[in-house]
Length: 167
Image (cartoon, rainbow, N blue to C red; front, top):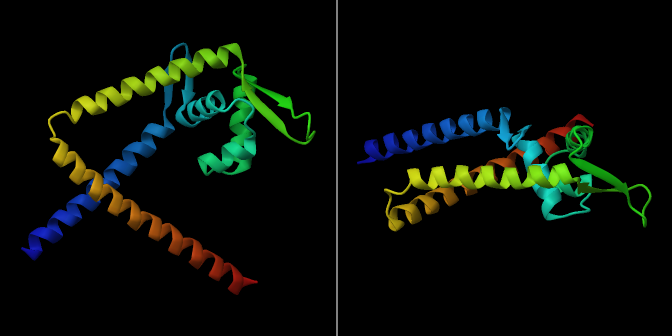
């Protein structure tokens, strides 16, 4: 019984690794959103600006858990493509608020449609599973997420301990 359990846990680990690699590859590829071709990260920024008109780059970086510099570069590209507009904040001249242009609004709708289509395809693939099986998978995934969160926390703690020792 213990051997079978270990084999299943290793198989689960391997499938998680495969899922991570597939998601990483998916995110690295450009996608067609209507008449536009963007990377997933750029589409996510468009969606956030659509949801929160006037959002700042700092807000984007906090939500996306990316550096402000990385978000600034993406926003600059989107501005250059005529999809996003930066407006100086009237109350704080150092800040710029982000808004979608008319083209950006069109792209946002295409991105939402793309996401709905992708979600439908995935849900259709999962249609053979019962509600109980899906609930079980959700419970397993939540435990895996706890493990990943613990790994992240320990890595951060060890990084800062290591950095202090260097100083």
